[in-house]
Image (tube, rainbow over all chains, first blue to last red; front, top):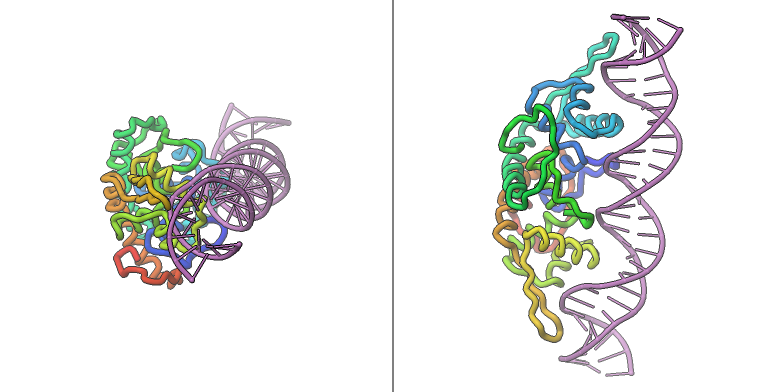
Length: 126
Length: 126
DNA sequence: TGCCGTACTTACCTCAAGGTAAGTACCCCA
DNA sequence: TGGGGTACTTACCTTGAGGTAAGTACGGCA
């Protein structure tokens, strides 16, 4: 969900799902957490080339509010915070599988470039 | 795809699919055309309460460029233009099914309101 | 002593998505 | 004669998503 509150009213399910997943980096965050299970803030930042710290924090907070990610704070110095997917986050990710496959086919069809990311895993969503 | 060109480079399939489906009314247009098979401009406008004519035209043109919708012009007075989904549009819609179901569950979970639309069909995406 | 690392917060700015409203050209109907 | 319908186009404006860059508090290390 965007920084400005929405949570409906919605036209349909797609609308409601989009509200939660729209945001430049949200689907990538979902994917990073799915891949690695649990990630620290700096790991996510490094895994999402180009993201600004401001947007990363903002998106993570919104996703936490929306019940997609869990935030675990370890009170120590230097600070340590771990992010992981909740059940809702995992099911959202599963629901995005088909869309990811469609997109991958589209990339092949139109011959679009892909951003080069070091150590990018090969998957159906890749 | 947005008015400003993108078509990549993309991070992944989700990114590519989102590029095509992001736009306030695109998923609704997809759904309208899926439901009715073929629709005229004014029918779409009436089916999407709140859409402005400018945005409807703009979205339809972009979706045509992206190979999602087919535009059939009948040279007559008054003008008649029919819109329908291409195979790519239909497969995109199918790929959105799971997401729609997830969103519908989310609506139920958080108890969000839905916009009241007269004659709205009852479906898994509704 | 000063730079790197942790995980943020804050202020400011830009740009484009989307909204509003009017104009176009033609016909039909009351 | 003028209001409504067809399918748009154009100009202008607002809003907010996202970017940039600096600041914070603390410790480790050279």
